[in-house]
Length: 395
Ligand code: T4K
Image (tube, rainbow, N blue to C red; front, side, top):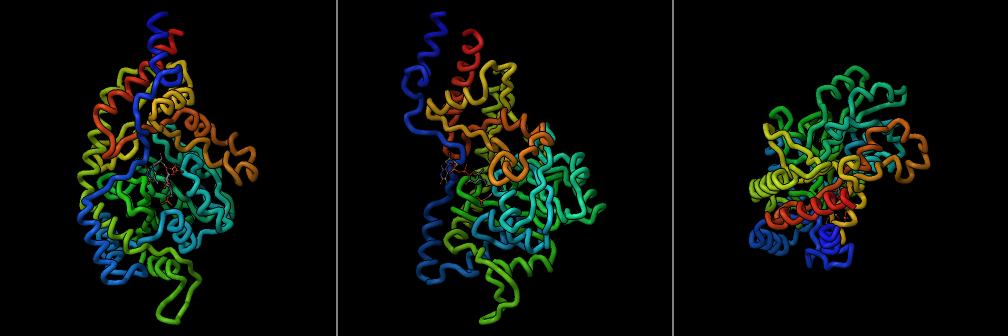
């Protein structure tokens, strides 16, 4: 009993000081070569061309399209607006089938244009939309499927394509997490009618804020370009409804600089992932989500499933302990879009159709990684989790 108390007293939650004097965050940005970035920004300032399809944006788009192996890349101010534009350009309306276990932007991008997101359950193994549960949600109003490659792990693209073809639906992907990832050797970004990346600060490759739509369709790309710039087809000539989705030159400069370090960022994420694997492997009830190492992968999320029946403490208690130690773990994507507004009010019974989403939302916990994380920090994070769990069992 003395031992137990001693351990518990060492935890900040029980009166000790936090283990880390500074907060360790999930989503800490990776910063590439500062000199290169600042040189680009100086050039932008000298050239006095700050936005509206400048040369840095064009160069960034070219590199992304080439990297992914698609015909078109349109850089956008963020992935949420990119989703809105892509959805609109593809002509989605009525109802679109989408997972609920995702960031709220996926659902909002639909609802913002009064398209109903019809939430579909996920496969608990992959955390991605379950193709076996899609057909039952298709109605005469369904116009598309919006899959999400959660954590950068690809959806079952083949099964989704087959359903989309059979029911004459558009197929799009929220690939916010999946830049730099492949599926069966082919880069994500080249599937479905269009895919959308996020380059938000918290993504392993960032443009401060930013996103991109990638597609192989000439027709869709043309519409998307028009829509991104108010529908302008030339000076004083608007031929389409549009918005302002443009990426700035400074963001593109950050993107180009980040791209130069992409291999390094992925290497660091991979190294951290392997370290987490080593230190977490024998902690009961803690399961680290695996990546398929045969594919290209960005390894940007360290995702745990906390099995309370084995740990004897809840995921939320563990989160509380970690936060008290200044480890700002996150429970993405709790509680699921269907339990957030306005969807919770629109579809109060959606939870009954989403048992796997409900279960997973109670279990998932994300830990810090990226270039700010060190081997020693990872070792200590695991040690705190171990103490919290093993001592909780004895109390
Ligand atoms: N689809 C999916 C599947 C997505 O995950 C997202 C975004 C989108 C679409 C939409 O993409 P964007 O429109 O954002 O391009 C954060 C990000 O803001 C969001 O981009 C991301 N997903 C989501 C998973 O995470 P929050 O609400 O968790 O952000 P926040 O402010 O709590 O920050 C997260 C952590 O990152 C904190 O621990 C602090 C740290 N952080 C954040 C920023 C901005 C830093 O250390 N430095 C920073 O500069 O949404």
